[in-house]
Length: 332
Image (cartoon, rainbow, N blue to C red; front, side, top):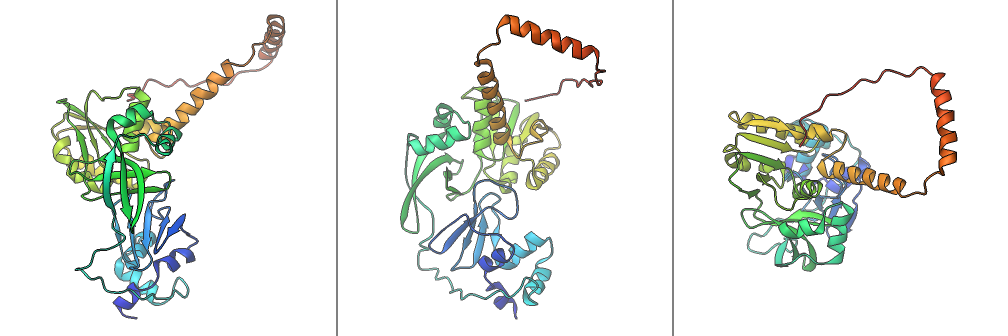
């Protein structure tokens, strides 16, 4: 097989051979949970007719050779060799028609309009992620768009170049141009978030619709360098990036790119969670459970006294384990 023949090997078949199947399909496109990182909303698109893939979360994409190289941690030459010798079983090549540059691509996302965020399904999606709708309305719009001739709607978060980050319960994507979003309050301190859901989570956590310090939302770690000129103006930069490989690499690049700024890694405070939104959801869940427990009927005084007496007798019979105290941290 030559190089062009290898590139025609079906991405769909390759993923299926690895036990990776689409969350949903529409026409000639399938949406998968990204095989390159952990996520809960499918944002990895595969064009079946063009045999190309695109990860909306990282901005990466390409042919099956690029995908195999990324998934298997090898060079493109090695990826092509593995595909050519059939290391992944018998994968059937597909016929890919040459793109005609003078004709519009029907699968292209086109923005139709935007208005105030009011649709119950979108507000319900935000509430399900513990984001306060009132805060979301300050920064987001309800955006109507088309893909493949069909009309959809989503929560839209505008970037500095006029493009939109789009989210709804079944879709995670963006329109062009892709760029960062900045909020300049004239502060010498800034925050940087990987995506707008984490930004809204931070504001919900603080119950504050307007951050007092400057903010940059990357809208993808691939936009990191676009944020550097803005962030370099600040003495301190608080980084709220994901706890995954992409987030750690982005943090390292950020520290390297901002030698005159103090970069504080805030992800250590939600180290047991993938991102800030996941941490915020867990925190809200614990608060809710605590309120529910306090709302339960109280034990009558005479029964409570008997229980306390029994616990006291048991306590003197047991040797407690030493408890190591932890000092305060520099939390956001």
